[in-house]
Length: 129
Image (cartoon, rainbow, N blue to C red; front, top):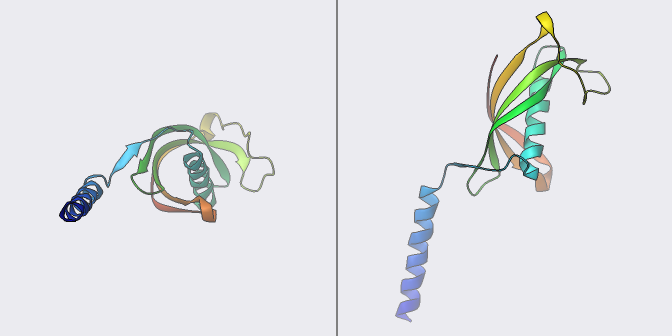
C-alpha cells in the first residue's frame, strides 16, 4: 500500500513539474487543420477591422506555433493589399495591387481556437507595414 501512495505522490510531483516547465509555444506544421482555420480567421478579422476598402490576402506564413496543452496558436503572417474591395463577391483569387497602391503588412497573431464550438478569437495582434 505504501508503494501505491509513493507512486501517486511521484506522479503528482512530476505532473506539476511538467505543467510549470512547458507553458510556452512549440513549433508546429503549417498544414495542421486547426492552425489553417486559425490563420483564415486571423486574415478575415484583419480585413473586417481594417478601415481600408481593399482587402488583404495571405502571402506567407512565417512562424507557426501552438501553446502547449492548449489550442492557442501563434503565427507570423505577411499579407498584401489586393485590387478587390471588401464587398466584392469573389475575393478568393484577387490579384495584388501593383505600383503606388502596393502595400504589404506583417502581423503577429495569437488565436484561441475552439473548433468543437466553431469559435475562434484573437487574443493579441500586432501589425506593421
